[in-house]
Image (tube, rainbow, N blue to C red; front, top):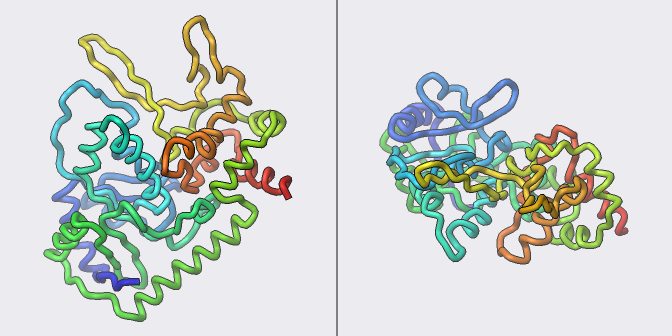
Length: 336
């Protein structure tokens, strides 16, 4: 592992306030027992949470708002810095970039937000209850799509500039803080924490099949398992809307030839309803199955990117307490 740059916590707080003044700067803070992004200023800069797994809101919402007018000229805003993106959300940008930048048409709104943003990825120093990134082939530390990666250990903040944008941001930080090179002992400690967490994730999810294996198992399912697990589903759509890789949306016409893009979800009743009331997903078990097939079967047929990055938010947010992992573990266990 290459040596990271190191900044004392005291110097980092000074640089942090300058970042908050110069950019629209977002970072994770505590909200009523949970953690989510907030716009940082002098008042809440001291409440930032470091290297804890996954804010409640996925990174994608900074680039794909829940609702936006796509026919009006967007206002030019200050550049945005998003600090605290975990590896699962960073990996999800593979799917979003392929969908909105790498297909036949480029989404100009998504592209503009991506280009106008700096992403500071977090290394996770612990795992949450439903984290399973390693089962999807993802390590719990930034390996792609972050401009800077950050880990805070033993009173020091360690930064690794990955892209030119990251180097520019590190240069900005260096104007307000003394930047040193991490020593060998610090570099070794960071690597040890990475390996320890990977082992912990592996033990916690040792009954869970990998991403490709999950797809193969799902293709062989019958209706019984969908009846069983959909029994508690209330079709709220939280699992799909909170997912960092889901991309479905509606275009709503408004007077004056305006079009509003609004997030949509395959778990909403009526998602595929067409003329005369026909609805291929009208039955709950069929609609419930659709999300699993989309994640593990259909998207791999059309995209190079994986459609589940193991963040576990769909389990965290489910009103019916349905665990996607339990369903996959059952399929895997029955295969043996």
